Image (cartoon, rainbow, N blue to C red; front, side, top):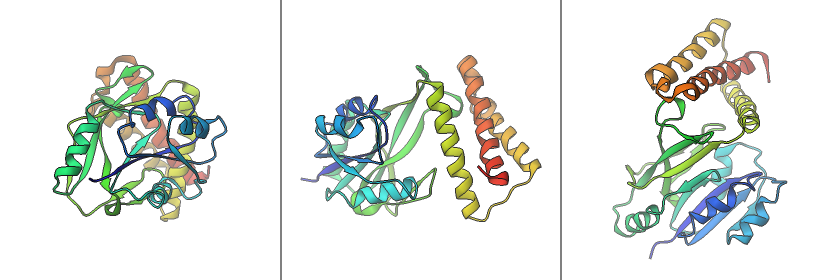
Length: 245
């Protein structure tokens, strides 16, 4: 019988980790890789039955995900974020996939919940995320928006998950600041440069794509706000690239 590990990267997720772990209880192993939490996240995870490994995130998310692969010996791995909740139907479907084959990697649809509103359009519309892999078939690359490198076919599960992205603006802007810095650092490491005109054009297109092309206007006022912030995110990451964080 094939075995499965659910892997969760966490840092200061005390408010989320218990509910997240509850939806992953069907796995043979739940592994939390903690990168220096100061709010009791590791203790909560252990109380809920997870195995916790402490490991600083010094080289970005891809390196942390790759490190996690070295900490389990299961046949399959499923990556989950602490603010995500798997649907009840996903466990049986994954078991069937693991048992039947043929071997592939699987995307899972995420329904994003932003400040209590489930988003169907705009920058936070439902998205497909590649998360379920045979353990030896995946390698991660990238610093901010890490990418799974696989050679197997990619398929999709029917069951999905909820993604509780933001509940407080302070958390949103803390993440905004951290991710724009990481994005700028990643572009700089690749030798990327940018001028003022490009900053403005990229920022406007990010807003236009979110609000018009992805129909963020259908989400009402919050759709407008999040589309404006999508443009702002693009502007800030390029400003940090040009002038430094």
